[in-house]
Length: 463
Image: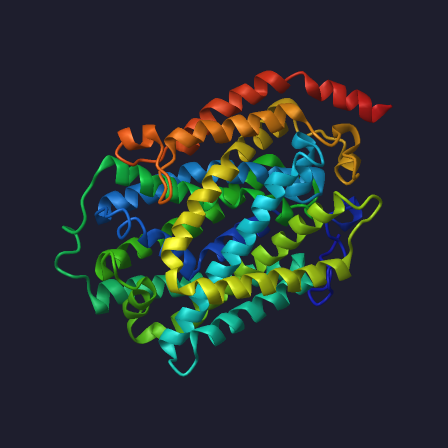
């Protein structure tokens, strides 16, 4: 099937996408994940390796590269679920947790989408204010938000197309910034001697880079569910993996460089503008488009998750275009308010937000991937996903729910947060390895307690 018109407002929301509506190729996946990562927010995330964690340039780059390569594996494995099942990621989670059991994760990812929307809006406002002081930060936030909302209104195909062109122009802009910084602005004499390596800080930066890409796991099926069923696991994985990894590593390394230049208390956005030299205005405009692309993606996914939440309680209701547009405005408004209120302490709040995401998402992604690849082998009763009572999967699937709770409890001693540091993390010098421990424990535990359940679901669906 040919792609529908880009100016046509998408009708579908959380219902399964029919085979006659499938379109696109795996190349779509490279550009959407490359494009949405090529933004100022990714640069700021990379800067944390040298500002917050105090690493030198070489060790920061190594932590960023290794963390990204590891974290992206788990995110990209979700890519095959969309073409195979044709439903959003949170709807698919009902197959592991049941319609009610999945709600905690659904609520958590809604908050995640709002948080990332607000973060993008703040940086968009700060960037535009920095290059044009006549425009206040708040008005810059609003402009970034409005562009994003328009793309989210039209939906899936326009967002894919938007990200394709954003990936091209931001990729060029990023090369320009590296050239300007190294060749014209120049690096300080102390650049390569700044910072210090410690294992706790290296692990912290490694975990942060892994989390940056792993946090995209709940998004992935939302942007593959229209693709043909025969897209294939391997092409889906590698297109998603390469776009995400490349789109994350390069701007994060730039961020680490800027972090060294501005110092631990410096303004990373201002440093980014300085690094761009005489090209600052076109570079900032280009990267603000990247922020708008990322915000549109978050609004769109937030809408699908919110409609999944509501549909759980409304028997027989299937939301359509009107519900999606109204919910888009609601999420836009909440994120806009949060960005305006929280901009003063942005970096501190953003860091805390990322680590909370880590604790919530890791046990979910372990359960989801084990269930899809090792237990059900991609074969589910899709019709049950959109039934309020959960169909053959019921309201609660206790093995998944209990494993999720255990996974979170296992993380607690290893947590290293502003508000709480676990006893084992203290002994490790503040290094946070909670996500590694959770994945290593919960993946085999969930497989062991659930490996025989797929046959029972298949039999129930056949009745």
